[in-house]
Image (cartoon, rainbow, N blue to C red; front, side):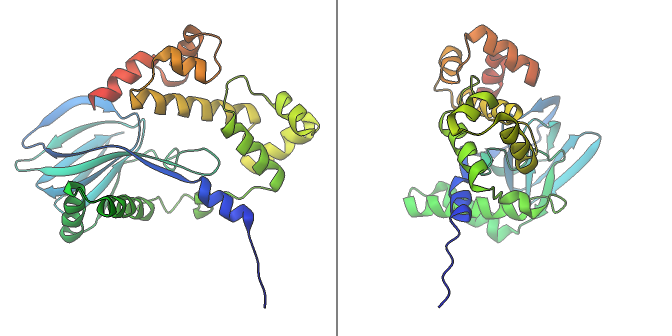
Length: 269
């Protein structure tokens, strides 16, 4: 009998996180919004009735009853809804085992036909107060999201398997996330020469240790801002910034808006 236990695979799968941050049933009859907006996290729409049109980067995406579309985080767009247009939408975050977001490299609105029967099932589960139905809804949404993941993005990106050494380091970074972490500090903690760590990390992860930490820190900051549960000072302190003013400067430099504006935009969506 042959028995193979792939602990790295199990660890990667368990580190994949899928969170639904918000959801609503909406009736957008005859609404046209010519102002451009940008979402703080990806959003998926399930269209029940009517038609909708999204314009982004000079491209028009049209949807109708039975269609599903995903608008990636940070994409600037404007929207138009026809008479009797109704839909259910969810804002979500899908985080891969390396800490990156599933649609981080997607620059277009995605659309597919799911069918009216499936949309009706989504609606029924959405209005259910049964916990099992809620779990079914989450799994249904995730299934559709993964089916819409762009085919030109390698499927290998959905599951990143690192060597035991790099896996230990990425796990440690996520468990002790702070802007104060550095390649030098990790080198001392794990007893690995800094040059060896830097080369191995860049080769396997595809970016420097500093950039990896930076990305995770600011992704965490955005999640905390969207949740509405933390003040900017609490976020700054939690993520290891020397003060909230330095955090705000770094955040604005990275996302072209202050944490306060980002938090305000998120709460208005």
